Length: 70
Image 1 (spheres, rainbow, N blue to C red):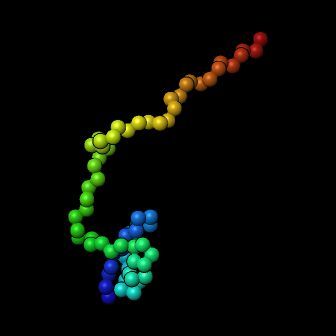
Image 2 (image 1 turned 90 degrees about the horizontal axis):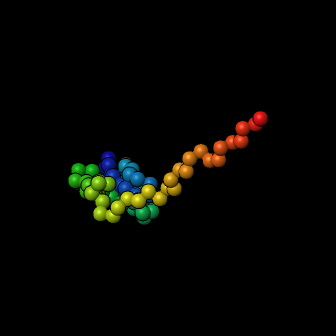
């Protein structure tokens, strides 16, 4: 029984247990890969060439003080 490893950009990875299943999956965008092949390492965030900018607004505090009732 063959074991065929497939990966998809959206769905991740899966294992096909027959050639027929693998062929049908390949028609739907799955790509066969070798699990023993070395994996390309992505650069870490500290090695990124573009600066990381926090687009979130800074907090401005708690707001206006509530009036004190007499």
